[in-house]
Picture: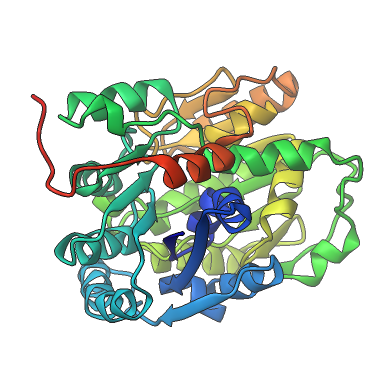
Length: 383
């Protein structure tokens, strides 16, 4: 039986791998090992570890590796702390394969630890192109990984162009789409007044049009976050549609965005806004299905948004060049441009589904592949 160790470092990590974790847990030839660290173990970011446990997964280790400050230097130090702690955990668990997600700093720490310990590495969501330091990390992890699980066709082609063996690259789709497909099949919306037990700000009727805001720092534009979120919030204030605003992730610059949100609340009436630290994946997807427009720079607007048909306004460079559907309008960090694009999307309404990032069965494919695949521990470039 192969032991598959999954390292989760954030709420985005978890939603991006949950269906694969479930499929691994249920597979007769696989044993799931769960390690949780970084922002996923902190109350400040919503204690994602509690969601993981409620979903029936038992973390075998917790890694406290996040250095306070959310600056480029603390991001680098957090990576270093992860690299100090994870080898001890891998020594204890003795996994046959480490499965890592995406492109965050905890992904890099996981990757380097596994590489130096000669543990085969499987990587999901590689091969994509975007803005920020994430793209560099993503491609670096690809060059360390032995087993590749890209989410879309152009990502698969890019991984092979990077010199990876085609037989090691499995086009499986995005596990996040699996969750979306399940939730969309459920009849109940599952959202009511209880949503407003979380967060601060106003309350409003979710049966009427509302905006969903999810905006994160751009690490290569460090120092600009407060201004950028200010432009967005002023645009949404101008639009006048009630808004659910989610707190940013833990990347360098998140404090700038959080400060911008706090200043907005101090200087303007926030009765039309609800600021929430964290949401369960199921609630977020249901909000995506019902929102008049998803605004910000989250990849969910592009991945899940294309599958659901969510009207989305993508702001700035964070998702530059990521393969996307017709549901997305791209704008710069400009109040008027954002407001105009939001009103255009509200007027348009829902889009047709585009399954660019999968059909809802990625987790099953990942588990099956992990149970059957072979690999070469010594990487060989195929240029």
